[in-house]
Length: 301
Image 1 (tube, one colour):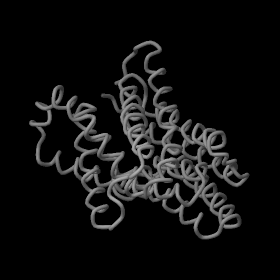
Image 2 (image 1 turned 90 degrees about the vertical axis):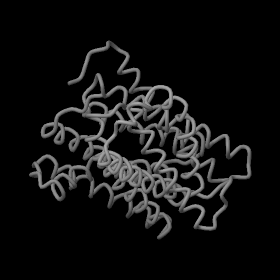
Image 3 (image 1 turned 180 degrees about the vertical axis):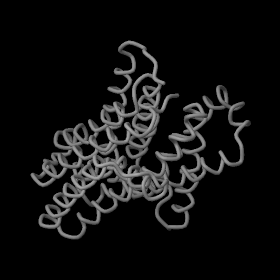
Image 4 (image 1 turned 60 degrees about the vertical axis):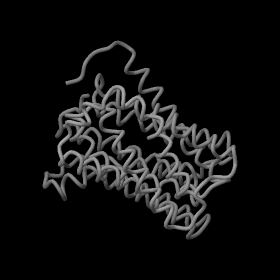
């Protein structure tokens, strides 16, 4: 059940969407001084460190009551989140901001597919149409990127889609756990698991472990405090008062915001392929979100 709280939830969603829209820009700036894997590892590590004192003060008793099964689910969710950030952040080194953020926003479609293939739920006609529309949009973007920049840009598109698949796994587990756990009790173990996993891969990779530039550290801190903590937390908080469908659809403002910011700050004008394909994908995600809401109850905190 959602609750009423005036205009505050809508303000929370607006803050959340505006904040997460800056993520791709901050990542692009950070990539000038650090590899993508280093950025992903430190983004999650810094976010975990910043949340630690708050969680210790407010939620340590709740964490102590978690069952082994809940800890196992949190661990798997964290691994999905690690894959999501590793692939999506890397995609921004190969493809445009517009293509990357639109493709990674297709996670609701993969949630719908997982519900059919894994949970054995019946696929609705609306969900089937949504998936077809989004596939067409993805093909349009990839075809345009192949013509414009060849294999490297298509590889970036593929990584962004892989990030969406991982985000779908993270979302599916989180939707179930958040019915019982508070926001902090859920995100802290998940962020921590993702941070440890990414740091382990980073140490084994031989890539630079620490960004050398002070400016790169600034972008990482802003990433952790802004899109990671403030942005996602605002959206999750709003779920207590607004439907999951409304919040999901509202987050489609992120690709629009990121694309406009990239045009302004990075001088990266979106191609006609990205605009047409992106519009198709976003239309598919909107339809999928409404189809999913008809079959599942809204998530509340």
